[in-house]
Length: 130
Image (cartoon, rainbow, N blue to C red):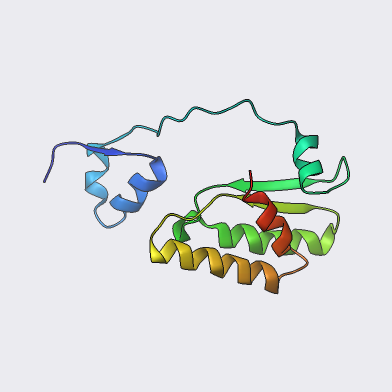
């Protein structure tokens, strides 16, 4: 067993330590370094998605991976849209190359389609262009 383990997030550390909580003290979290461009104005994203200015917009930005919980996001969108039909939801992210991640993206698309009031396929498709 190693003396120290580097994790890219606290969530990843917690996942690995679920079975062996005693290893938690050996972990150090070092977040992935990314260079981000200046964020677009919110109105630019709404225009790209062909939404009127001021439309409430909720987004999730994450790699499409089963353990990221994006299915919870889609289901929550359905509950929110049932009470606030003007709210729109987008997922900005792509799956990795693993068959599991690619299949999960399709599962999310099916779930979004099944919950059409929550998140339309077109909005998910448009969000991937970000």
